[in-house]
Image 1: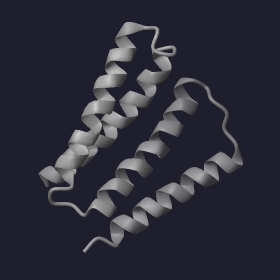
Image 2: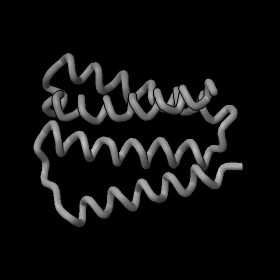
Image 3: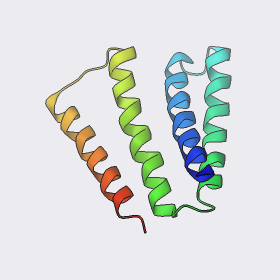
Image 4: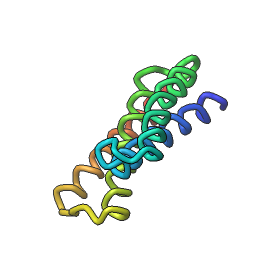
Length: 106
């Protein structure tokens, strides 16, 4: 159970890092830049803690896939980035892959 908490933390930190990257304005704004660096440093640490008991293939896929899909959705919402049918289908395919791999866990 603790490994799943570490994995959720890793995903959350990855998302925070990506959003902070945008707010850092090319690393010219100190606060978001520091947040970005810390989040991107701590995210793989949390992921490493998660894979102590979770399968690497499962944890890494969830980390990368869920982090990517959630980041895309948040960027569409927060930064009003473009949204298209192709982008929606791509997010759906990522989520289907993540769910499929999660269901295949031993």
